[in-house]
Length: 306
Length: 292
Image (cartoon, rainbow over all chains, first blue to last red; front, side, top):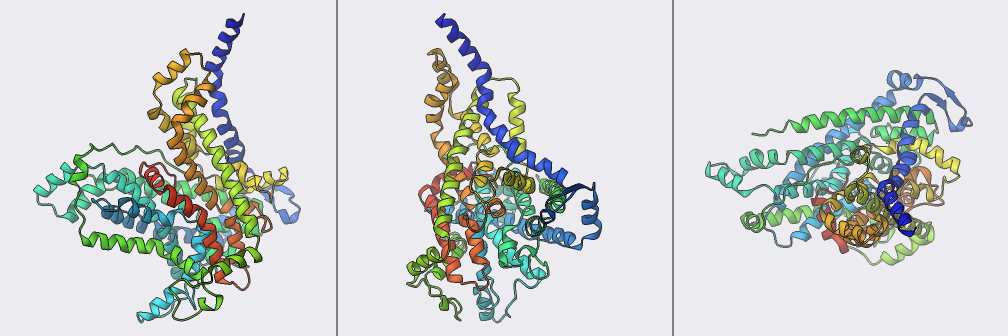
């Protein structure tokens, strides 16, 4: 009798236990990850504002039509997102390649240097933005003081489109470059030295070796970095929100000069409580993210492999 | 942040030969690296400088560049004038719970995916990998509506519960178990009549320790630094550190010493974790493990 029960328990264990072990992940993800994302599509087709008592009326694609044809703020936000994407992704990758190249030597204090370049990445985006907002201050900011010292004029960083995008891009690049550098470094260390020796024999300079050997060999990592930098950038929200903290923070500057798409979503959803409209922004942003990520993937894939 | 892509780990280089062949660094390399390091550390240092000054010093020209003696007075002011103690407590509870839960569920699911045979295994694993690329923050509006319906809006469970599992964790642990736990060991356990749960507890979990520690570190830092969702679902009366910072920074007259002192205090826990385990964290990223 007893062995029979054991036998049966064993069979149950083999057959069904694995499902029990993976179930928590799938259940929680379905409820708190996937369902809200899909339900956003339904809310986006409603006229639904919490300030109107949360009455939901089905209006089909009206929110989308409004956004795409009659909302200059939306296009402004998308434009800012794209501008910041260019201003952050390209420098991040280039600086990271340079830093990885520096780190890929027989350094003393290797761990110290590696930890040093990663330091920005562990700090919180809220703290970083508040610190940078102070550094980029108009009247007493350190950066303006430095500019004046070198004879350049002060810049009202928040006021202009170009200047505010530069400041925000600086925060993003500062925070993420070291992370990408370490990813590049890991693969640089796996490139066989015989390749470089052969190139040296052929008379290739260090510069040529870097662009003709190192960079093409890092192609998979560069693609990875470009894709995650792009996906992260499409969600940029904390930096523009906290760059100008205060009553009108959600508009991203007095003239919306640095309001990103994610920030516009936040403004519509959680400053104006227009859930229907905000959900439509969320879906358009999702589509744009997939498109831009795909494009940057294709662009990064074009790195030459001789 | 839930996006990560599967990517092949770089092939292991042959030991010995490679290291020797790397170029010897000259003084310019060190100079350049020290400049990079200075740039990396400066904003953090600057935050410390400001938080150790009296408020009037911040607006002085030329700016003060060395720490003053007012740090403890400013820390006392932060805790007096805001809910920062509550924020720290909340952040500790949120990050601690999420870390324990993510490590537990990830090792459990990772074990099943790596070492147990069941129908639909590869399809389900593919699903896990695919979900890493889904930007779930874009579902904030229905998520917020759900939390309101549950009566959780403004409560820290609203931050904890959606963070209890991550696709990244499951993927990460599965990769580790595939390599690190030999099948023979599990077979031997089976022969002795161990149930799979006992195998998990007595064989797999002890073997998971190094990877689980790295996953725990990443998860803790990520949860501690999370900003968007807590901002949406919590109220200024019941903040985490990050939302408390945003409230402090958005006052009508911003007292920068106060705000940057708070920013400094809020960075201390992750900085401590980083100083203690920096080697493991760096190693984890260099294995291509950390998500973006």
